[in-house]
Image (cartoon, rainbow, N blue to C red; front, side):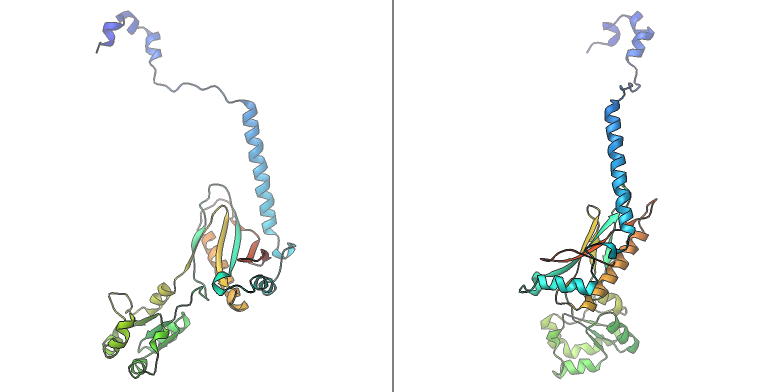
Length: 277
């Protein structure tokens, strides 16, 4: 490979014009077309006006919408739309628009529905009376002390009705006499399986599970019930969902407030109805 000096005369290499031609500075680009810039600004202003109108609409009470109904009234229409369909084919869904500035991270989180979509029957065994009350309050189907173990042993309590059995460590030795009953059914509490713990409340919550949600295309859509749920059960699930959405908003960083738009309650084959949220 030839050296640069052997191909170009020394006098030219030393000249200032030659040095400038090999400059590493970024060249200046020609300014963009003014029409393109003006068109871009016009689109941004149009979008800002649309966002402002959406925020104004979001601040209005839900009952100002022509599609508004109270939740019990809305559920009557939605259930009527699902007549003749199976329980597993029809569900109640809530959809909420999220109004926020561009660039703000999407809302996400999880909600523990008071009435789960899938019922899980849990039996909790502990000799602590306080823990028994806490287990029942947190969603356990049944909770009790060692007397329930005797009932299982004597065949007075049918364990096939339970999906899972949880226990505290002090009651573990008493479970040995029912191991032949619980073991074949996969219900025998075990430390390795994580079904024996002092913190039964945490085990119950993790077993019952939570319903995750995530904002997509400026909307959050979440199934909150089945058509065979009572009005009170669906209402409690809606309240829990509203609390979870607002909690997610409170921990999301944004220069301007994030707003929830008019919330729509709908069923699998039914219409969308605006409700209070």
